[in-house]
Length: 308
Image 1 (cartoon, rainbow, N blue to C red):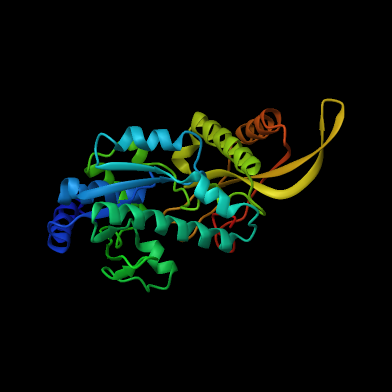
Image 2 (image 1 turned 135 degrees about the horizontal axis):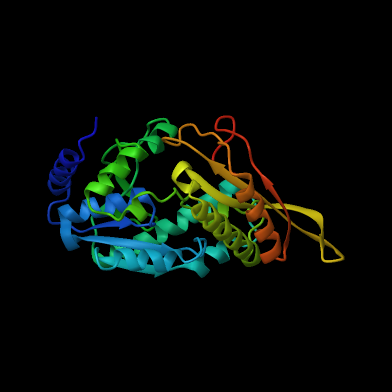
């Protein structure tokens, strides 16, 4: 049974021992893992930790503003708007793994630039147990990483032995607001893996609007407390529809809502049908490019939680 107070105390001591008086950077996404890792490491390093939030143009609606408002008063916070850099590189790319590789490379480029600027020697990551378990356990607790232009940073992973429910417990103990501690997980590549097929500014905008509707309606009904993740996927499929008395031809959006304890497995629970119907009506009414909404009912396994 995790004792959060003991865990925090031991982690702070270990971080201080490892990093000393050097400067460290952490990629702060606004998700639970990186938020808890950031606040925990700040307790150990103070302003020697630079929390870097990268806006890659693939965020949820209002995400950048939310993260800045939440963390700027609490951390040595930097926001880097690299959205054009990411979107230019992703334009026209359809393969999900290629999207991930492009995004990962640019993230590293951005962090290297910041790390060089501040003279960082360490890179803190919010890796948790399911991350390295699903990667076949090949990640070490502390290891060096050489960034593209030769900068070498030592990796620190203060919450790598925790599962998501334990991360939330530690976050609460650290005084992080419940609203943030209990946020649903959000993929690092953002909307890039929730838009199937080739990316474009238009598709990202459609997906962002649909996702906002899903989040609003799920939270309004209160089902968010029972779900692990709930979001919209913009598919590359177009289907015939009717808008008014006119035949239309628009995108298919898939709703994905799953319950889970630790993301290792997940299932689609019974959902309020009125809520599902309301989401469908709103998406097709408020987003002219969408003509059809469907619901994914596949569990993990055999499916994954995300579509790509």
